[in-house]
Image (cartoon, rainbow, N blue to C red; front, side, top):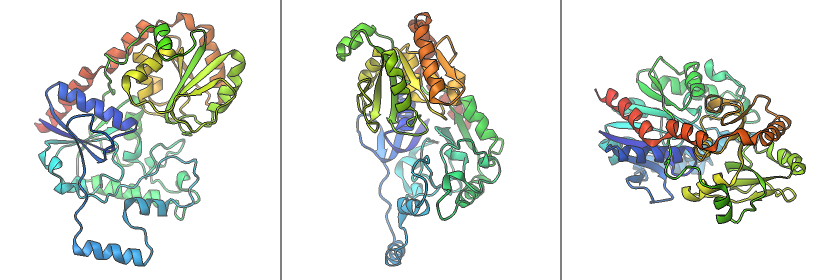
Amino acid sequence: MKVIHLNTFDTGGAAIAAKRLHLALLEQGVESKMLFVKKASNAIEETFEVEARTFTLWDRLKVKTKALLKQPIGYWQQLNHHLKGQDSNMGLFSFPYSDFDLTLNEHIKWADVINLHWVPSMWDYNLFQKLNKPIVWTLHDMYVFTGGCHYTGNCIGFTTDCKNCPQLLGTQNSDLSHKVLSYKQKQTRQVSITYIALCDWMKNSLRSSLIYKNEDIFKIYNSLDTKIFKPINQTKARTTLSVPLDRKIVLFVSERIDNQRKGGSLLPVIIQKLKEENIYFYSIGASKVKEIDDNLFQLGIIQDEETMAKVYNIADVLLLPSTEDNLPNVMVEALCCGLPVVSFSNGGMNEIIKSGENGLLVKEQTPEAMIRAVKEYFLNSGKYDKVNISENAQSLFNASNQAKAYIEVYQELLK
């Protein structure tokens, strides 16, 4: 069995999850490769970059003509052209087109099964009808079945026609999403795709979408290395990282700290209000939030997993104020380290977090509600069993379980 995993970049949450699956499959003896548009690291075996497309004379003439006419060239220029005027606070928006011809790629030819992950700009939907291979698509966000957005907020346009997209307000064409969704529907009409959802919320969202055709959907949780993400003595962890032993510490982790969907706009208010409670915040991620007084410590980007595990172990609780999310890696990592999670109630958090057992779910998505929940947590922090939280999480998110579940899916497809 030969499996190729596709992801646009080798960094970011989806890439981390995909690489962990790749390693888990290799551990189980599966021939697995990964293919990226851009690869920043060679740390993981059997990972490759897509080769630049070879342009014909006709292709080059078209490019020169567009340049002379000052028309957008290539995926990213066209995307920026169509999104001009979009509110900068809007989330990601992507097109189902690509500058790459993957039908000629040697690694695609090699594979028995193609497993798509997060593939904007890499995977063109017309490839479904060009490649006669089983396709598995792991849903790291909602882009697969929307008119271009990666998370829909309160919009349900993806269930009907995706017209008047709220994320395209201010651009030249708010119905561009309708054209994108129609293209996706057309290109997938005659093909079968096997979907992997990371949680029930994503599974149900796909089922309610216009693009869905009663295909197979499996729910398989992401995994991690439970030998790394595990509880260690908090005093030891804090001493190692030179963190005061007497602090009440709340941890916040996001690739970009100012990410609106991840609660970046709420964070300054929460931090400021909890200062009087002698609560300190430590953040991991690109430092976009200005330091607020003396109770926010920004540790920047941490890519080493062992260091990251130590950071989870210095904290008393993880703050997860995402207004919409799937099955975030940070929640999985924290729980496997035995760290309780205080989160807004949505997505995969509803499925995993049990209030009073491994954290607290907050229904009202306001900074005031989150502040009350953090205070409540510290009033009752003694009742949370770190070892029990870790053991339950590790039974859900261990690599062996994930790999075996995927192998069953692949084997069924190859029959």
